[in-house]
Length: 390
View (cartoon, rainbow, N blue to C red):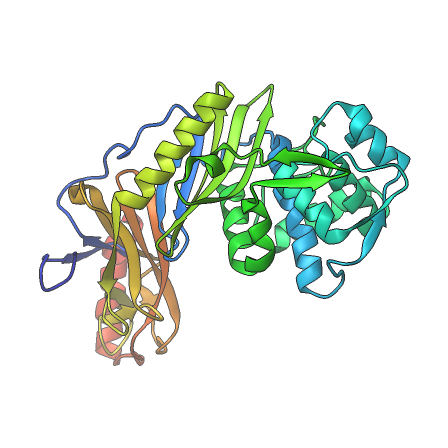
């Protein structure tokens, strides 16, 4: 465990950036290697980024776009705009483009039948049903095109700035893109915001129109605590997966893209998720109200102000490789006086290897009033001397 009592913390300040050293070693390579072209993994409780490789590279979502379609449906049910017992009718368009005639992933919805929202959501979560997605989109927004516009608007509202959708299915279409970071964030949101509906992802199979199909997620059959979420594949970006393991109340969520086959996708996802569960332990880096560091103040009664977070700072640290953990307090400074207690100042950024693992906002722990004229004059001279170096 890293703490002030057991590991010395050297705090220095250089030209407005305070450096908090948790180890003497610089950031190094990843602690884990994968064949995936892009991958991203988060610990659900602490938000610690456990692994990151090309996290913001745009990729084709393929069937992973269905996670956003389900986000739209889950959100509507939670908000009361839909109920799980509402029904939508299967149009000829949905039947031809996503149903039995399409030759794609389908729940075999019968033409002109009425299907409950709950069954559509299960068909999408378990069978990656393209007909289910189109039926839902048309019933929700009048057309799949209108639904895609709403998907993009909602994506921005929930903090996904890159993800762009042209349809509800992820079937090939120009302009569609996402990233492994944003898909992981979306998956984490689905598990947190809609725990009852999220359970659909863990169903082993689903029967519709007297046809039973197994869940397409290979992780569910491995008996490793997997409970979601989806797989996809595109010609451009290969095989991808968004997976989640939940063991002993601890959840890790990961997205991978750029794998060569079904088999490689399943194996690489299993290895990454299991490594995330077994190779880290929860550590309280700073207790609630504990001073994290200090920021320089310009023209104040004091030359610095103590910084703290809103609560304790917890993260997962590697059981092995602690020498690869570093942290910095970053802010724009020196801060002009007066500084009010509780004022946002900057952030504590923690790296594991070369991965930015966690960023926690920091606030002034005290008030620093404007200093005397001599004090301000001294600070002004210092600023002239070193300010140009920033």
